[in-house]
Length: 214
Image 1 (cartoon, one colour):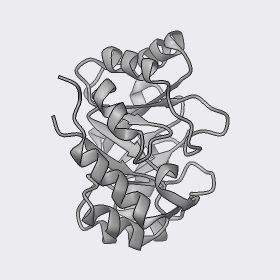
Image 2 (cartoon, one colour; image 1 turned 120 degrees about the vertical axis):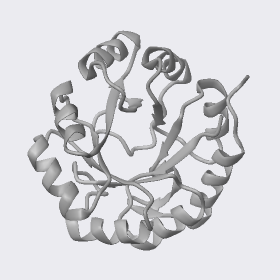
Image 3 (cartoon, helix red, strand yellow; image 1 turned 135 degrees about the vertical axis):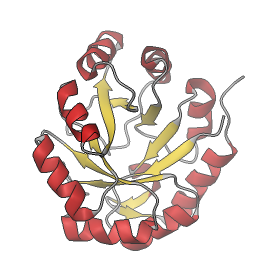
Image 4 (cartoon, one colour; image 1 turned 180 degrees about the vertical axis):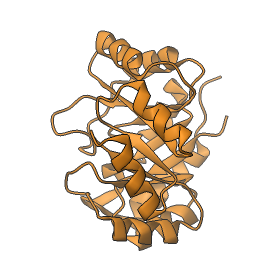
């Protein structure tokens, strides 16, 4: 099983180009707020630098109509839904031809299962990350026993593991959790939104070489 990698929180086209050249399968740009938020014009430049690699926009509680407007204006491939949306928003986006990743944020097993129930049935990937004040991108790792529980709860859907990953811990996370995709942002940065080339390349090399336990 080959695990794919997504580099999120991009703010510069050069960082996007390096991520793609180093093996990233997905890129992410943020519209939901925080220190990495960008506008449509900068997102479009990152899409251009991606050279066809899918770029997802990270959204909060925007409506499906607003999300679609941004996706189309920036040329994004899809949307990563960090708000407490029900399944109907995801369905509307998918029906409009947009890739969707749902996000489940939790701090224990009961909240994990509530989040899975909120997202509902479907085939779209589910990104799991720890529930922390201020949202993701803070370098806080999801405890691996909860990540393993999420792998079981997600079942046949693709699992995206996020939160506190870096070149030093991603191989162990892949070995234990067996995610389909790993998502990194702060773990490859020198400052919020500014990727460190050495950390970025090292992370993607570590993902390339890692394998889940048999």
